[in-house]
Image (cartoon, rainbow, N blue to C red):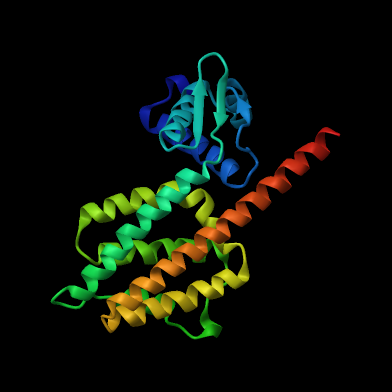
Length: 234
């Protein structure tokens, strides 16, 4: 049975697999900003029909990773650091508002789960960057959710999704993993003591340092990927 005639469940599964493969290729700089391709090329590469490919591509377009042009196929959207800066600014606004709410709330927020993860001895820290990156996202989302404002949490989740393509690179460097543990521990300590002003300063500094680091890493990785491409052509 072809994907065109597949049951809805199987068709959705195929589309999800194609979506994840293309997204991984973008995240890992296998597909570079500006690279062009057709639905037929992706279908042949993934061994599926064009229907699940089309569903996957339009999903990635909605998420801002791809763009489509009439008669010229698909392309990976160029990196827009200005847009990423705006998203980071929005993230800072949401998280600083969360810090203020947590420190001003009548009842102390339960941050015990976050403390169990981050307030550990150096010898017990995780070293796998991908795992730490996922935990870092959960840390910041946990702070926003702890306010009880689910609309703030929803917007924060949307921002998190949009910056993940570059934010995850912050955890490809060992020193940044250690810095994240240190900074998260201090932020949690200040929140527990309800020191809103200092917690806000530390949180802003933490996010700004991460943003600066991923800018540098992204540019370096793009340069290396382009050089590999040029060498391949030669």
